[in-house]
Length: 117
Image (cartoon, rainbow, N blue to C red; front, side):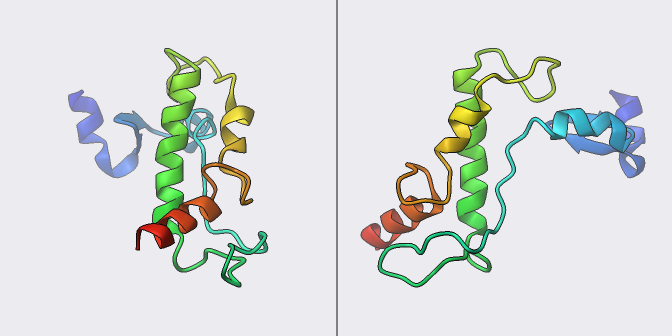
């Protein structure tokens, strides 16, 4: 709306919706998956890497996008801006654990990247 556009300097935007205070923003923001740099995880095979600090940002961004798509898939009609909580967060998060056995872990992504050159 025009009122939203006039308040660009004093509002927060999330998925196309304006929020005017952090208190308004927090419930929707807390429904999103947030993957960030980690350290101390089991090393990625054939490396001594136990952290993705400095190189994992694209992997983590991709994980968040895939995670969001999986939440939408497992919760038809759900959206982070809706009042309804998603019911399958734990199921989706397990795909991304920092472990070689997790299908969408940084370990698996790194292994595929090495394989593809």
